[in-house]
Image (tube, rainbow, N blue to C red; front, side, top):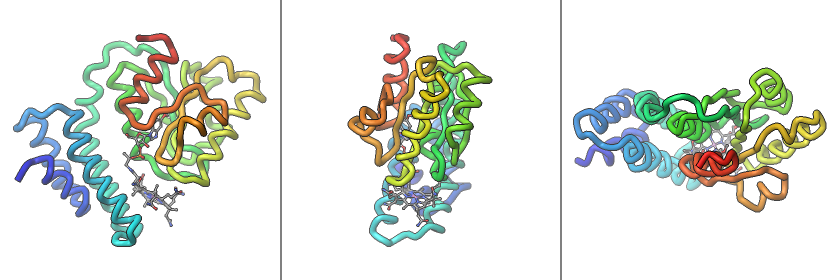
Length: 213
Ligand code: B1M
């Protein structure tokens, strides 16, 4: 069987060890590009998991197990995706917003940004306005990235932007947002500088916002 199909299946079935081994195999034995392994193996598998979850064929435990398998594959892929980076082109602070525990997409964006040469400070999940403000004060980033996967938590992106305005630091940073329920029009509505539908586009948008192209 095609190694990427096998890898996608390992994600769907939540087989962490197999996902790790197959990611190694795809990269080292088959010599496939890390981006291809990511999109056609790991993300393809997670998309099926998402569909199954939506159709009530999978419940939270299955999804968690699949997420663990995805993380095992990402661990192998991470250095390969980041390998292209030389010295940091700019500094990014990124986090999944308050109330939201989804971090796979945010981690992908972080990895792609690292791969593009950004220094990434990851605030993790459930990050409220105070965490972002603190990171701006202590880290002086050029860019703030927020991720949200729930229609309820995407509202918290606005709270972060409002907190930056209130503290008088909004013009020190560019703000980029993303995540499945987030759209360009929502980004415009809350006053974000940029929106990206996926991790690869996030890099392009970040570079364009900072005039790094
Ligand atoms: Co959750 N979940 N989940 N979940 N989960 C979704 C998001 C959901 C769409 C499933 C569904 O119903 N079909 C649904 C949200 C509905 C809604 O609000 N619209 C949902 C729900 C309801 C929930 C719970 C409420 C379930 C419950 O408890 N009843 C609960 C909430 C917990 C919480 O956060 N407080 C919950 C829990 C979980 C798990 C913990 C089990 C697990 C998360 C594990 C983890 O992340 N460590 C989980 C998962 C895995 C999913 C699905 C299946 C997959 C998400 C994922 O990782 N996708 C998801 C269904 C789906 O999306 N198909 C679902 C793969 C990832 C690569 O894509 O994160 O979209 P994504 O990231 C993309 C882009 O969006 C973009 O780039 C990434 C890569 O290209 N992007 C950015 C993301 N962030 C960006 C930031 C940027 C730019 C681009 O700039 C900064």
